[in-house]
Length: 102
Image (cartoon, rainbow, N blue to C red; front, side, top):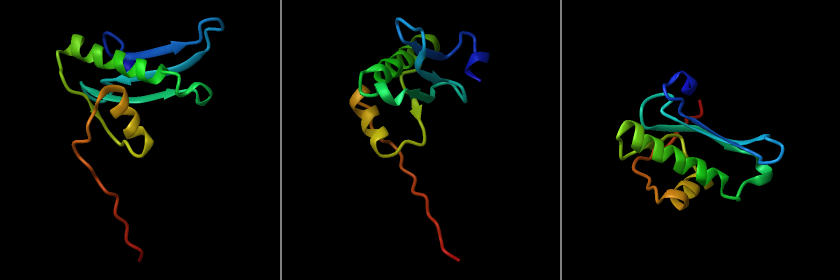
């Protein structure tokens, strides 16, 4: 869906020598200011690629759409810690999945 946007709202990271895709981050695919999906190869996680892609998305949202906020949905566990560390993000809403055994 992000490739239908003009301009395209997906950033792709490639390995410098082999040009293999090692990560990507998308924003504004569902609605302006939304973030995701995103991913980085497990073998290189922790090297700063994900944070860099996230910051490119933040910059693009701010400069292209003149928005100062971004919504990242369905975040849990270590992912929430990553967003907080990479950008200073805060959790503004929490939803708990409730189940009942019948």
